[in-house]
Amino acid sequence: MKLWGGRFEKDTDKLLEEFNASIDVDGRMYEQDIKGSIAHAMTLHKAGVLSEEELKRIIEGLNGILNDIKEGKVEFTRENEDIHMNIEALLTDRIGEAGKKLHTARSRNDQVAVDLKLYMRDEIKDILRLLRSLVNTLLNIAEDNVDTLMPGYTHLQRAQPVTLAHHLVAYCCMFLRDMGRLEDCVKRMNVSPLGSGALAGTTYNLDRGYTAQLLGFDGVTLNSLDSVSDRDHAIEFLSAASIIMMHLSRFCEELILWNSKEFGFVEIDDSFATGSSMMPQKKNPDAAELIRGKTGRVYGDLITLLTLMKGLPLAYNKDMQEDKEAVFDGIDTIKACVKVFDGMMKAIKFNKENMRNSAKNGYMNATDMADYLVRKGMSFREAHEIAGKVVKKAIEQRCALEDLDIDILRSFSDKFEEDIYDALDLDKGVHSRAVIGGPAKEMVQMAIKRIKNAVLRV
Ligand code: ARG
Image 1: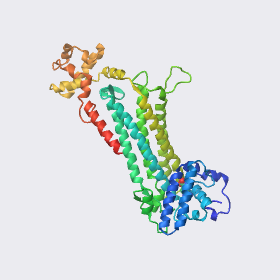
Image 2: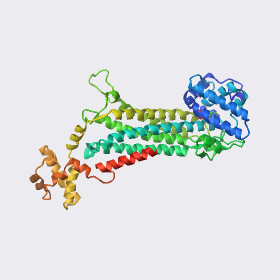
Image 3: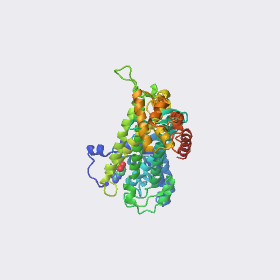
Image 4: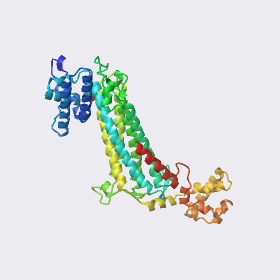
């Protein structure tokens, strides 16, 4: 008979039993479910509901079940619907009467709320660890490349020269914000819903603060209806996860371009590339493409949850059982993607010569020419026009700005003197952009240092 079978005369139709069961999805929260149950049992004991002996048997029973699950000795059943009832049934099987008292002053509604929070809290910590590792990988590459010139782009057109380090630090800034968002999410989520019962609390005198403390929560929720029907934390997590995936996806898009013969800026290592079954010459950036593709999945998870919640009256509704599949998929996807991306970056090779050549060939020092004229007393608008005309000339002559003779330059403006060639030097141009946040070596080094410190604190 079902744990809730008292008022029923007929058995559940097999169709509904299959349809209703969530154990295949929520089974992975067994550890959190057991932890939550132990804390609840201790609180029941404190409230005088369980005797010392009953508490002892419950805790021993639950720990035994935990061990057996870890050792693969337990088979969950769909008949017992979800992880909560599976574990309760196992406990009662093993310890008898005392097991039947565990669910006093509790509902699966506050139980599932606490399980999911505990589960997400652990997983978010793990995701933060993975992101920290990725940022470290990127910063290590950046440290070695503060002088590696490459084109900076707008509209995917070569715009102004930057360095590889500068480009990588841009992504580190994104990942740092991502880490902050995940931390915020944990901070807001970390209040205990246990004691809220099905929706309206409980008549038992539960010390909710005690339960919260046992489970490492910072406090307790303030409204029982909200406690059991709130999934904001899951939505916040999936939105943070979506943003992380968006960042990874942009980076992947760049790597895919850079890995093409047309760019030739990077070579993805053999160990992170794949071949074609038909074209023997191919080496494809599948890892980067898959991460870009999986971004859509995580967005989907977020939309699933937002849509799931939008029409639900207070408080718990069974629709909410669907939340976990989306959250778990988001967690699994993001962990896999960050790990693979980190591995790919650790092994990637940068073709610095191609990057530098590309930086040299795009008239990217045209702004520096205009700035030079401004320094000689011209307005920026006029300088912009003259530099534009010089670029046109250089294109006609198929040469770089710095390859034009001084006489030719002077035919555009008599403000040009020999020191213009210094001003057009690409390396000097990059390293003189020494405003905070700029690509100049010292500034990038400072940014690297700050990000390192910030990441250590997360
Ligand atoms: N398996 C359910 C879920 O994940 C647990 C809560 C069920 N509560 C209920 N009253 N049916 O949402």
